[in-house]
Amino acid sequence: MQRPEPINEEIPLDNTRYIESETDTKGIITNVNDYFCEISGYSRDELIGQPHNIVRHPDMPKIAFKLVWDRIQNGKNINAAIKNLAKDGRYYWVFTHFEIIRDINTKEITGYRAYRKAVSKHAKEVLDKLYKKLVEIEKEGGMEASEAYLNRVLHEAGEDVTFDNLLEEIYRLY
Ligand SMILES: Cc1cc2nc3c(=O)[nH]c(=O)nc-3n(C[C@H](O)[C@H](O)[C@H](O)COP(=O)(O)O)c2cc1C
Image 1 (cartoon, protein in one colour):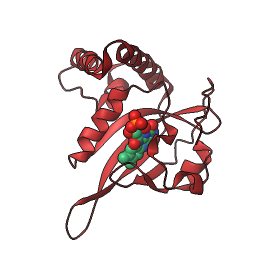
Image 2 (cartoon, helix red, strand yellow):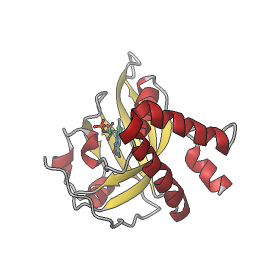
Image 3 (cartoon, rainbow, N blue to C red):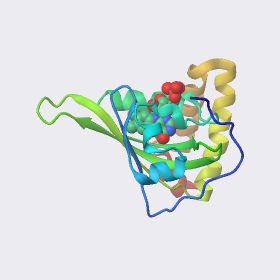
């Protein structure tokens, strides 16, 4: 499928609704809710069976997804702020909570689930700046360099600040 050309226009989100999806262990979409389809602009049929990077926005730093995958593959939940790309090229920012799906008998990881909610205007401004910087650093020095920069920013923001609780901290700190 051809990637949409990004346009600098935001899709407003209803902050009372969740955008939900499930994937297998490889990140292939296995289920989405109606609101996911409504906001992304893709039909359920266009989404199911596709890699979840179908909504990846070029403004997202790779390190963000590396941190997510490292955590969930180890069976741990994580939160992340993500800028997504809709089918028509517009974008939408989401606070995303990732969870593990396990087989009820064997307890083995069978997939992952994500719930997404709207992000405040202020947090979006802070994250936009940080992610743009991380993308720039990645272009020059790769993910090792962006991870080092991110760790420095988190450390400077406070001892308990992690990528996982960054959004809460943005609300608290700024
Ligand atoms: C449950 C689940 C939900 C995901 N949701 C998103 C999402 O909303 N947007 C996104 O860009 N990537 C999402 N990802 C991460 C993608 O699988 C992928 O790692 C990311 O888009 C980076 O693309 P790349 O792996 O091609 O570099 C999700 C992964 C999982 C397991």
